[in-house]
Length: 304
Image (cartoon, rainbow, N blue to C red; front, side, top):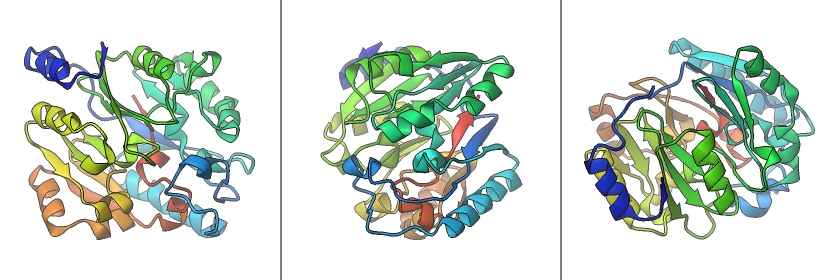
């Protein structure tokens, strides 16, 4: 089911149509190390979080990447690291291009040519197909579908929350709904200037979520999320959103990861609320990589 009706969505939830039946958190993650890291002017055309005038320090970006890999592994979560490519500067954010569900690798259809080249890399494809994963390649379809950039997933319930922007079109919504084997995709419009839902919304281990309401045109989304997550919704303020607090991810039932910038900007009340829900917050500096318009969640592609 694909719908824009919040009432229809809430009604289906109340009838038990989306009761959890799948893993809420991944077995591990895969990442792509930054090589000759820089801010890509092509992606900056429709990503307001980027500023091509801000020069990036490639060595510092690599150090921050290595520190993040260590932080995740120290928490008991497996990390597979792939080499970067100087010709695809955004490949440090693989979650927009590659994603998995149990037994399936999905390749997204990217908007910009630089990222389209990234989708063609064979090493990630070969790694998963050699492990028995079916390949679903959306690059062969006439669509725009940047996977878990516009599509925020509740893995356990098999729900997709898809914020519409230049990074996804109607054909892409249909393609992703099928590729991720979703029971439902709830569509909504992002506010002017927002490019990816995962900057302003995150579902945490299928039991809570964070949301910046003002980044969503449709007010009904807050009502829908409150209904699904039994009021375990943290509403971010503008400063928290701009610091990438919405670009967080729970990699276990209780381990929540975000950048140091995000963690430092959290209001006391926000931190206390997350901790009251049983989350341990892990953070590390990623400010160099954040110059490219994404943060910690964008750097992680989940392995299911």
